[in-house]
Image 1 (cartoon, helix red, strand yellow):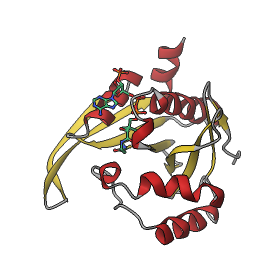
Image 2 (cartoon, rainbow, N blue to C red):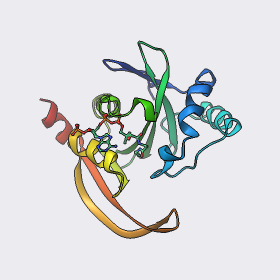
Image 3 (cartoon, protein in one colour):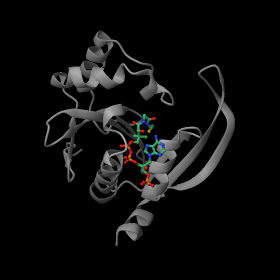
Amino acid sequence: MKNLHIQTQRLKIRPLLLGDLTDFYTYRSNPEICKYQGFDAMTLPECKAFILENLGKQFGNEDEWVQFGIENTSTKKLIGDCAIKLNQPKTGTAEIGITISQSEQKKGFATEVMRGVLAFLFDQLDVRRVVEIVDVENIASVKLLESIGFRREAHFREHIYFNGKWGSEYQYAMLSWEWKERIT
Ligand SMILES: CC(C)(COP(=O)(O)OP(=O)(O)OC[C@H]1O[C@@H](n2cnc3c(N)ncnc32)[C@H](O)[C@@H]1OP(=O)(O)O)[C@@H](O)C(=O)NCCC(=O)NCCS
C-alpha cells in the first residue's frame, strides 16, 4: 500500500501528527462540526488519544477508517482532516469523510481535498467505486458531493436514530469510469 501524501494547489493531505493537536482540538471541540457526523465534540485529552491511536493504524486495512491531516501549505496550519476507508477490497469500494475547521469553510478547501483524494484512489490505487452516505440535512456536504459529480443513488428515509430523532440519509456514489469521463 502506498503512503498517502497528496499535494493539491493550496493543501497537503498527509498523516495526522501529534504536532497537529492544538489545531485539531480547535475545530474538533466545536459541536457544530459534529452535528451530522458519527462522533461527538472532543476534549483535549480525547483529541490526543485519537491522534495517537490513528498513528498506529495501517492505511488499507479492510473496513478501517484512517484519518489524515489537511494542512494549508502557505500557513502550515492544520485546517481539517480527511478519513478514508478502503472498506471492501473485493468490490474495490472506498469511503471518504471530510471535516474542515469552521473558520476555513466555504473557501473551496473540501472541494480541493475531495478532487485530490479521488484522483489518488481512482488513478493510483485502482479503486472502482467511492460511496458517501450523508444526512439529508447536511446541506454543505450534499452541495459538495453534487458539485464534484457524485450520483445520488439512494434515499434512506428515517433509518438511523441520531441526536434524539429518526434521521434520513442519502447515498451518493461515483465509479472510476465516471470520474475519468468527468476529468477528460
Ligand atoms: C461539508 C464540509 C466538509 C464542506 O467544506 P467546505 O470547505 O466549506 O466546502 P467547499 O468550500 O469546498 O464548498 C463545497 C460546496 O458546498 C457549498 N457549501 C459549503 N458550505 C455550505 C453551507 N454551509 N451551506 C450551503 N452550501 C455550502 C459551497 O458553496 C460549494 O458549492 P458550489 O461548488 O456549488 O459553490 C464542511 O461544511 C464541514 O466540515 N462540515 C462539518 C463536517 C461534516 O459534516 N462533514 C461531512 C461528512 S463527510
